[in-house]
Image (cartoon, rainbow over all chains, first blue to last red; front, side):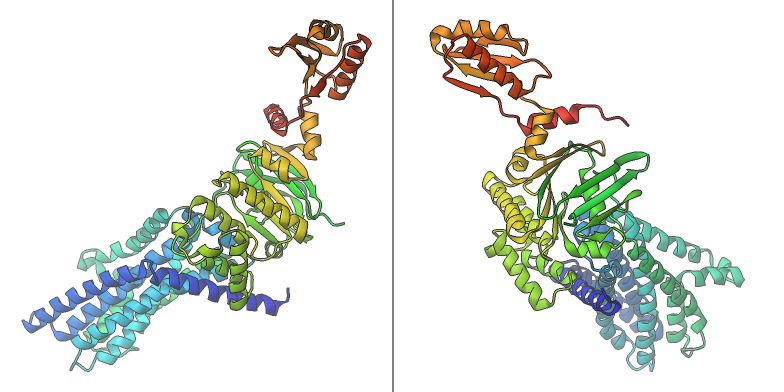
Length: 266
Length: 318
């Protein structure tokens, strides 16, 4: 088979896989219930921060930042859960083997699943837009908040998607994949919750930057609350960018070696 | 003619446990081969090796003329019904087939046509729009067979294709297997525990035990060699029954003989090592010499089931 026809076939397989995965996720799958829960969470949070703002307990920009951070973090977390289930779930349900028996490149199959998982972030962020825009009205930070939220959200969601897919490709069951992914996420997050004194200095800041979620949300906070320009704290995005690239690469690598992992049966 | 499947020295272990040991196998194109063995014999592992789902530890193989070093090439030419295949409950039967056809490189329109034709072929024509979650086990099995055929494969691996099917469904699947081989020239490797399926549908039988081939040949050959029939019945006129028993007992080929409850029938057993055709000839000659008329004579037909049990019960050297 020529290189060109192989590439055409890979593209066709990716599109077919992504289309089916998107349909499975959003048409009768978990997508809509997850988004319903996410919207309820956003609604309650927005109401509370708006009420606090009215009582002068929370400055308006802080309210915007809080809602934006929540939207970015929760939508990205949903991506992690979907990605962790993407391959291990197929393996558990016995539907992976028929996929592996097709000549479609395994990386195309995984990429199709990644697109479906990332769609959760996209829809989640689109749903968050009116909330953030409403809370930010009259603050001059609306555009900045929405654009920076999209950039940070994309990086964090990309990192979590890569992490989830990598673990999912190596795990025998959905539970193992989800638990391991969440554990990795927590392992990066817990050190950032040390007493505030421990968060100062080079080591403390390194801990904050090492967790891509914390680093990304810190960047958003500096932009929206402190009013910094987009480039001033951009070094806080190095961690999320590097880790998104790293986990994306690892997902791509493990996808080419995708296996059934059911060796004991004959 | 190039064999449809050929493998030499194929081995696979799971940790310290060997699953397949130096398998040598050649399957002629267009044949239907029964692949038998007890649970744990290594049948599914062999299928997974030949369909490139697993990588062998040692050995070489080629399927449909494509060497094992080109896994995607092999997958393009084979169709597989895995034993433990799952089906996405939220997809319709037609969607499952369309997706697979697309993953085999078919255009959207072509995939839709393929799905429709295959659903008709396996008897699910009216159920293609129904969610797989609502399918019975038998319907899923048919869908799995249809899925194995989306690429018009040259070699088809069917792992327990009649599992969960009623007798009518089993017959339909076996008829489909025969059609695939006869009309489309496809080679079929049929892995099953139902030996009557093999007797009815297969040209050749390969029996695997503990990762090795322990019998290989036509259904008749395997049944004959491993479980040569040793029992027979003779019907004689009622007055000659005792004479017939006495005559049998004088023959060195006969181990035992006795009258049955029927007043004109004698049952006999041949000694071990005596070939059934030799034993039958000796018995008939003795009866003729003794002047005993023979009303009917029957030596039990060799059965694959007996052969299978005998072969797989034997210890295989490690």
